[in-house]
Length: 125
Image (tube, rainbow, N blue to C red; front, side):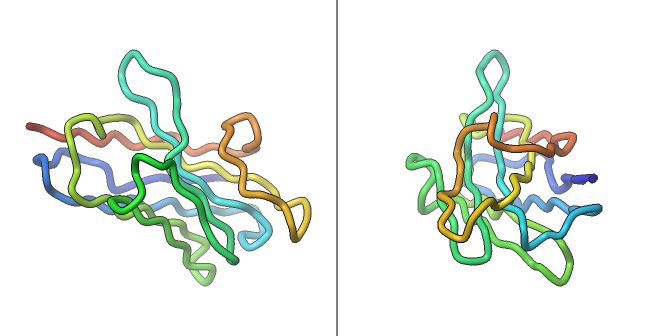
């Protein structure tokens, strides 16, 4: 299984970026796909996750970040708008197997089996 994240870069505060994560080696629709981030000196934190039936977000990021997925391309996206300097972090994509149709979308990183290599997002003030 490989998760290849891309799309990070340097952006000014107030700008936008779209991250992509291409998955291979797994049956995409059988996995919850998620984004986490880790800022310098801080612990990794949940950003957003989704499955075909819906998604969930970290409360502080609702309204600015949007997660989406394209099953035909085995790719999950994270659209980030109105970026702030505190959004500066390495962003990781991750995949967790869907164990049941009623499974709650996990927000703990320990629930995710596969991880991408991360892509750096830097927001300048």
